[in-house]
Image 1 (cartoon, rainbow, N blue to C red):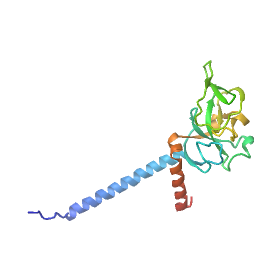
Image 2 (image 1 turned 180 degrees about the vertical axis):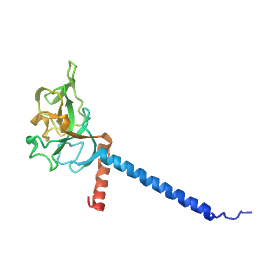
Image 3 (image 1 turned 60 degrees about the vertical axis):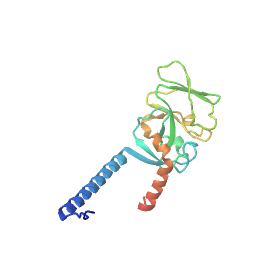
Length: 202
């Protein structure tokens, strides 16, 4: 014999609704906390031009972790408004997206298209395994970076205006570093930001 269906009494129903409301409030609060942390920890940037192909395409959106603490091989966003040489080759926000190749104390050179690096304190040069680069890197003479200096290049070596032309930049001018997950998710970021702009007009 089947039992009768059990119905919630008013007290149980009220407790269920309260539990759902508490869960929703906690969820919204958590989302706000994460959103606030993300807004103060990351910067949204858009790629302009072809200097970072094939890694990045013009129009890609990226999230960059704010701060100057980038390591060799990472993609960085650099403020170049104090560098007159970039005046006619950057977007209106006066920033560039490049790859950090060398840091202070490093010695760098390029011979016959091969970029070699001697790290600070070491004696021998080491060829950089630049799997991300395309095109030919034109030869440039040996250069040792002074305190606070960095050397950046675009991945598209035949179409990038970078440290090969203007010399070293300053680490203090790095705005942020693009984490690998942001590079991998750039298509999704672009779709989300396009949707968000259409929805909120921002």
